[in-house]
Image (cartoon, rainbow, N blue to C red; front, side, top):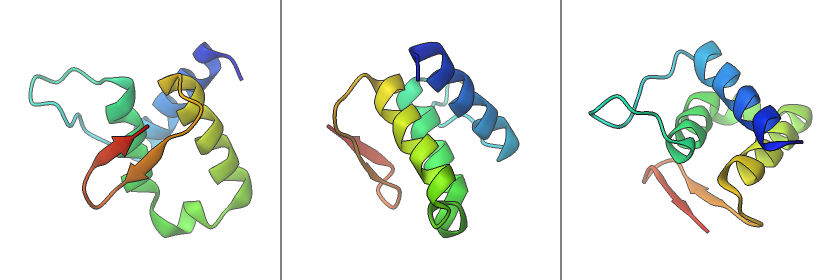
Length: 79
């Protein structure tokens, strides 16, 4: 998955889930997109192995990290 493919997939999911910007200025950063999609997806989508594999790959590529820890409850991402 290329960087552009990852970002496109995340933005599509962001829009499908009806996510809204976390940042009060309205700017949506890659990390905000990943957090918003993870929060909106919930257990139903994380139980789908195909969806979760795409999400994981897209998050890693978009954030340019070999490992990412997402804490939806705390709305944080660790590397």
